[in-house]
Length: 409
Image 1 (tube, helix red, strand yellow):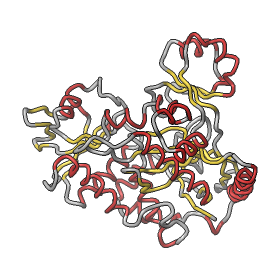
Image 2 (image 1 turned 90 degrees about the vertical axis):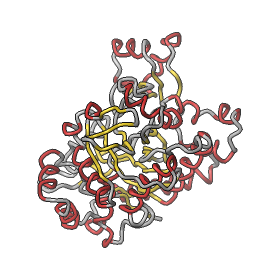
Image 3 (image 1 turned 30 degrees about the horizontal axis):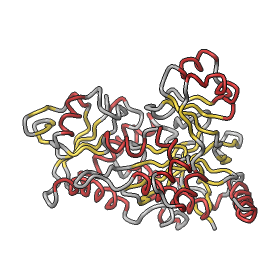
Image 4 (image 1 turned 180 degrees about the horizontal axis):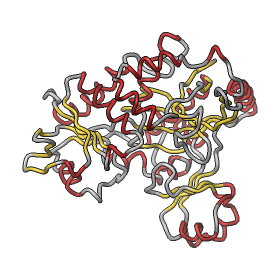
């Protein structure tokens, strides 16, 4: 990075950090408008959200700069170039989540998720604030409900052409016990408004027949997959139906391997490996600048890893969320030995930004934040943030949760 570009980043970050360190009344969320939008989904649903997820939505927006947004767009485009053209006549994968930490060095891609939650909830949040004019086309496409339902129709169209999409099953293990079960209900309501019969089910509720999968006697055309068993080894009947093309599964194991397997971060952060694949120099520059260096953890290098651990974040190759992930400086010898015996990658630390939150009856406090770009077919549909305390997001912090993103020049 040249001195001139670095100076630009420094000034850019200083300005954004200043905005995120203040509690501006004019930049806050219209809480009444959000409550009205939540109640419009039904009083029972609104009560469930308040009871189960009281800290689902943050009290304050997160400021990001146009420069940071440009960096994120460039990274997403570069990833698309690296992973290549998808298989013809196959689903593309809904709601990819590109998760970034933003700090004085710019935007850093921490990971890509192919089952990123929160898309429906953040669409509701953004749409509730449209009249405020602070949260517009920079962070979300217009007519998000049409965009989202159109995405699912396109997944079906990829494999079945102009035949109508009639039924969808939202599938997760014990869905009613999931913390984000209210989002499943929100998704069901949105899809049914579009005329698509929608079920929320555990995989065990799917009946296997010769011509496909059925739920409550109705054939399922498409499964919106929220399972964290990414290769479906624990759900062989579902995997078999997908492999036989008896049902459209999105996202599916092929999507995970192309984008979200943690070993992809090793490739994305290696200029030499990218160059060997024939990736353009512009994409190499974007990825190497914005993807923290990531390496496979090998047991024969144990002494080196232990000595350098404080500079790295350790993630299981097949993990998700915060499960099995450790910041190096907090590792014990026992956990470190377990890491060496498992499949792990280590990613150079890229600290998240901070946002001060002022909540009634609670002293102002800084919360960490990350920024998630919801992406379909390489295009950003929605940009949202998550405010939290601790190592990862948990939606249990007063003042935290999904946050609006405000782009400033």
